[in-house]
Image (cartoon, rainbow, N blue to C red; front, side, top):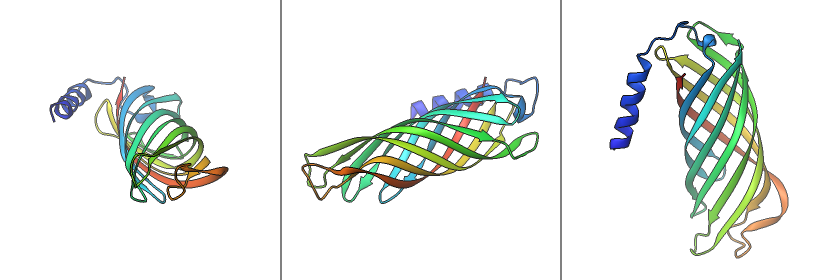
Length: 186
């Protein structure tokens, strides 16, 4: 509880510092905190962080790490993901932007058997696409919302085929993610 209050107070204090240009496109680097959900044949809550870079007027790049936790078919599941998305603002005002996004990621997926004691892991590669929205909340804070479809390439978990835990063949598993992020522009 104290950590969340401290982080909130720090963002509130820093958001009151003045940026020379009040438009979203003028920002170059931001650090952000992310939260959300991942849905497939399982449900996972997500928390993470990101570095947001605007190398050109309408272009943004997010470098992120997310940590997912939840359940899958009665067993525990936690995944650890790193990746990047590239965005292009197709619609933009001075303080907001709407953009399609594409990206890639790597993920360590971990599943624990419902009957306990057994664990399966797999490293997967993912391709993602979606849509995002960002709006400035103050001179240095922005709120970012994203919805993404992801195709993970790897071994599917087979929790009813323990002790192996994963299928022998590589397959594509589809998932959807939604995120909200608070970014502090440096």
